[in-house]
Amino acid sequence: MTPAEGQMKLTDKVTTVLSAVAGTGFMDPVQTMSIYPRGAEPGLTQFEMDCRDWGFTFGVAYGIARGEEPYESDDSVCERAMTAAREVFTRFSRANIFTEEAFDADREVRPDPRAAAEEETEAA
Image (cartoon, rainbow, N blue to C red; front, side, top):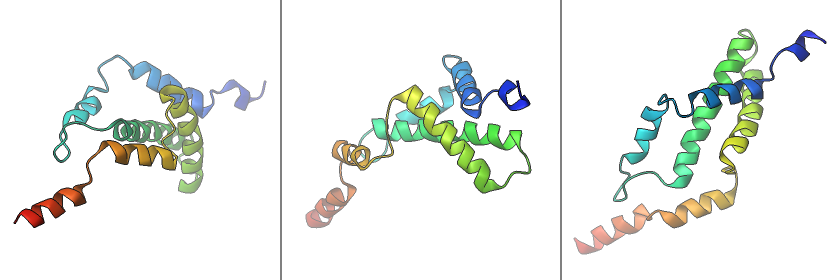
């Protein structure tokens, strides 16, 4: 067995971290952010929560990747972290937020702020 084979893959490390924090209350501050109002509607849409979770997943992957190789180029660290984060995020969330359909579905559930501004202008 080579040293590389004996080490956990980056995706395994990220999965381990996310599994360890699930249900511990560690993520409570992040979950609390979803109750803050945006516009007239309270809370975040499912897409916004998925984006929030994606950001956390990528951040964990980036931190681990950077810790593994402190002198590696930023581009290389980002590439490794992106690959691992996508795999882990898809495994955990089963959501594919990297599609135009995901953006379109989110636009359908939130009011268009431009329409509200136009109504206010017309009422004035």
